[in-house]
Length: 450
Image (cartoon, one colour):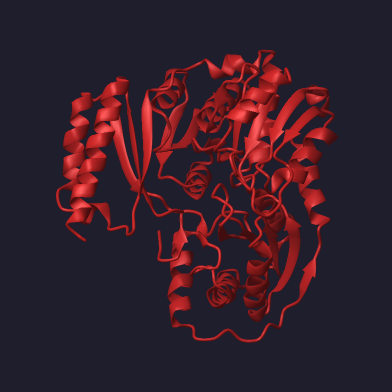
């Protein structure tokens, strides 16, 4: 992670540095200069596709951002409120120089963020982010805009048509589905897609007002969607996050299927159909051990990456693999996309379940999760963990209590001021104890720095 870029772009509380006009303009200007440098000699159009989610702060960020981008000479096309993956798709489809999304994804409404996509529909590589940060530090002013600014909301329809083209309409027709749109970017697109495929759709949290995005709904708060799936006697339910790049599902009995469930079930269905390259899936280090072991036991090897769907995407590309993602619901079906897409993933998983002839609950009960606890500890600063004297060796010593039948992962959040501690093991009470010991050790080590 860099000074400004986290695991998924630049993110902060809107109106607070770095999400202030001066920095945003510089970010737009420098990013496009650098992208123009690295794509020199290609036949890409000097244009940038921009979308935003439903946050009230989106329009003011767009105003500053498009000025900075246009100062580089590039033209800006705004497609309005639309899912993050729509930009990744449209950049490739239109031959644009790059894409930008104004969104803080699953975070509360007061946050916002800016994330860039290359002309391949992938997140920016870290080397490029580092180069952009270094250039911003040296820049005093941004020149006047020379590129144009236009709005073309019809491009979102092209994305919707693409999503619908990836599934068998007849197979899904009349399927009863519940959709929780998190009062975010999927509020219109997801409903249109599922309804136009002929499904019987019950919709909740699809009335964004600028302040209610992710508020007790969406991929981080799925209980209402799960209960509604049972109440409506639906085949399945899906909850998207604010920018619709992740999805969590429910079976017909109201059991949650997270990213691990969806990836594991889809991977095995793909393996049966001969669609799983190298019989391998990509997961992150946060994936549940139960999922990892289940895949291995069923002939699917697993590659683990650091957290962030861009790292999953890089591993998929490097190994020419078919599927990967995160427990949180960022899932990449590489045949169709290079980045996490909640609506696409929901459609693909639904299609695999329908083809199987089994209820969704069959896929929810194929493996048992190891007891795990994840705690987010608020921090005011993020000293590198290996610089905290005795901390990492201390964690390793604490982990030994689980006798090789568990693990501890400690990392800083790339999007929030938090330390995340994940502990998994066979014994739930031991998991709780180990987590408390690790948290206490961290607080002791950082107290010395105050």
